[in-house]
Image (cartoon, rainbow, N blue to C red; front, top):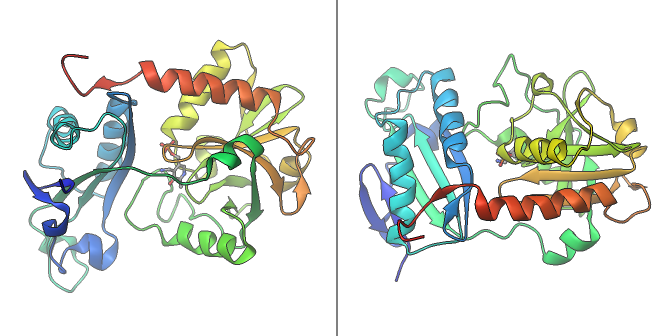
Length: 294
Ligand code: PMP
């Protein structure tokens, strides 16, 4: 059976799931989205994803014509229709169909899409051995421009950095903000560990406030690991004992080399491994149930 995709209240087989070429999500990247994940019949922190989607929509003055509860149901129902228990979920709300000008007032109805599928970003080996990354020359968007806290459909900033990673033959790129501080990677937040303290850039550094990031901070606090949200530079990454990235698609993945510098002893660190384990445990218990009988 083909994947069933939700578009504005109806379900279509993947091959027939189409939107207008006049949709401003397509023409201008005008819209917001979420990447969400279901594990063993539960959608991990679905309400937090929906809250972030609606906050972003508010920031770009896009009125979503569904309540948050209705949006939660859209996600759960799409998963049920596809009989999924483990999935990657892409929820998209674009400005909708308009004319060729960029004026959003020409778009009368947002387009709402929910796609449920699988995602594998990195080979399993990299979770065990760690990832090599580089620093991109492309700087993360400034909060005064398109605020990285809003997960907009315009991902070109990140894609530019991803191209740099591709050119360098690695899978991720670190992005600095325009003040030279570490912000995040193209699709993940970053953590370092130094002298037993877990450090991650603060919300105002110009990052997406990751749901995974926040879960890792909570887990660290529960495990008695000291956490600091503070600005740091590339040098502090090079000098860190451990480093890892977090994101819904990537989950939590160790980093062992940055710009050719070996991090710590070149293997995933102890705190990183403890947090990765704790996160794996958390996703199995924390989330909205998809099926009533579970
Ligand atoms: N930063 C960026 C730029 C991202 O695209 C993502 C993944 N969507 C993240 C961070 C991680 O956020 P989350 O943990 O909510 O998936």
